[in-house]
Structure formats: C-alpha cells, structure tokens
Image 1 (spheres, rainbow, N blue to C red):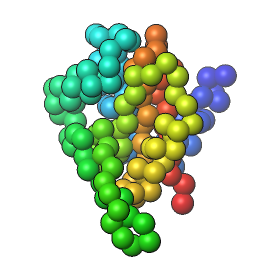
Image 2 (image 1 turned 90 degrees about the horizontal axis):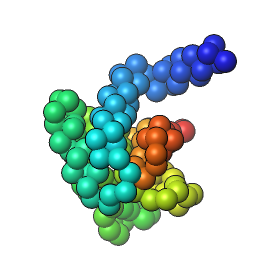
Image 3 (image 1 turned 90 degrees about the vertical axis):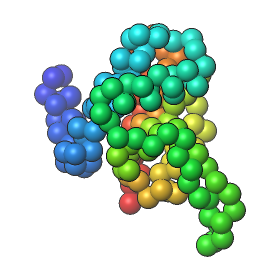
Length: 141
C-alpha cells in the first residue's frame, strides 16, 4: 500500500511541478497548524484571519480577499473574490461547513478558469481531522 501512495505522490509532483508541490505542502502545513490550535466550529472568517497570521509567520507570500474579474464573451460583468492567492499561482478557498458539496468545487473550478491558475486547495475547517477536509482541485487543459 505504501508503494501505491508514493507512486501517486510522485505522479502528482510530476504533474504539478516541484515548486507547486512544495508550496501546497507549506500551505497545508499552515492550515493544519491553524486547525490544531483552533479546532473545528468557528466561522470561516476566523480561520481566514488565523491563516493570514500563519502565512505571515511562515513567510508564505499571499494576497487575501483577492479580486478577480468575471468576463462573459469578452465583457466584464462583475467580480469574484478569492480567499487567498498564494505566490500568484495557488488558489486557496476556505470553508467552514458540515460537508463540502459539488457547488464548492464548481466555485473553485470557476476561480481557476478566471485566473488561469492550474491548482487550488479547497479547505474545510469544520472537520475533526483537517486532512479529511482538504481537496486539491486541478484545472486540466
């Protein structure tokens, strides 16, 4: 079983690139620390503020509440807002819900398309173990 896990990790590294793989590891580590200290049960805004602190403490470059233009057939029709854009390449979307549902993934997929980023982390803090609340979403070409 260990071999299969390592094989999938190596495949993911090749697909995403070493830099992105390291960056996602740092972000997940920061999120785990926030969850370890606070635990589940707070509103999303609390986790957002705590993650800003943790990113700063760890030297992880980020933009918070990052606005992105929404266009339709070449016309600007509004604006979306990313929870975090990390190192200008990784979207981090936070939730504090009982269960992630397909609309959460659709939202993140739309953000990936709008920004032309290739990877996002969808993180739900309302779980006993944070590893069960993290979902990687990849925009395939």
